Amino acid sequence: MLTEIFTDRFILRPLNINDVSESYAGWLSDNKTSQYIKTKINLTDLRLYVAERSGREDALFLGIFVKNTKFHIGNIKFEPVDSKWVMQLWASLLAKVTCVEKVLLKR
Image 1 (cartoon, rainbow, N blue to C red):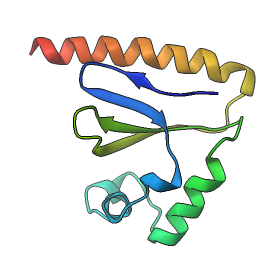
Image 2 (cartoon, rainbow, N blue to C red):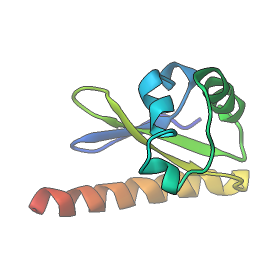
Image 3 (tube, rainbow, N blue to C red):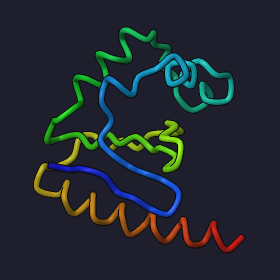
């Protein structure tokens, strides 16, 4: 089972319905976001959407959280994925997030 990736500033972990908030639902109706995400969804439907992907072997749905505040700032979703590749994808994400964070911290 996937748990969490910790970096100096962020936590990546599987998203669950407890992470669904008005703020998260608001991202989907924001003018800038809606240029890239065409779905309009309410809080109830968003909870259902997240719940349907939770624990699935063919979906990797991660929340990105600020480490010191636990504030939810974004998501990463891969779907569908072959279940045998999920752990490799998870390990690859850890390496990439760590590299990106090191570059950003140098700025």
